Image (cartoon, rainbow, N blue to C red; front, side):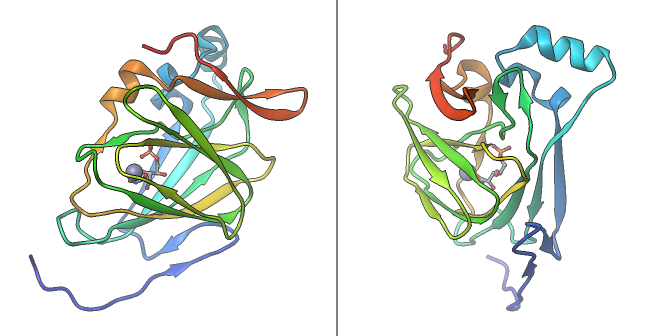
Length: 191
Ligand code: PAN
Ligand code: ZN
């Protein structure tokens, strides 16, 4: 492993930004159309010229190799696609036994996790919530509030990101708004 010098970076605890960051990823609705249930609604939004920014990821400059601990912040904007709250794509780690820690910074949301057998669990996240993603659980975060939801994450450098499995199967449950409340309901498209 390459020897590094110690360094630090600055989190804006209210805005959720990370300075300096090596890269900022921006995910719009058009980047994740197949992740939401309301395909007809999406088609209408995109054809009408609406392609909202759903979330941003600020990535640390830490290399993604064994022994390192890369970290990031994620900001998910408030909003819905149909009844479904704005959320991240979600992924398994390529090395399934690699865990992760999330720390809530601002706003509120849910961390939805799923095992390969389709078992789903969710944890509510608010500022100060340290949520643990155990080995073998896919993870996706959802903004269930009305302001941007921001959190910090740190994971083992050799974990790798497998987006394909979730793109193909989806999550067994989806987080929707019902009578003004966030609830997890079965996803008819699962597998
Ligand atoms: C997080 C996520 C981040 C964005 O840093 O990568 O919140 O979500 P997606 O990667 O699913 O688009 C993490 O879980 N890293 O392993
Ligand atoms: Zn992860």
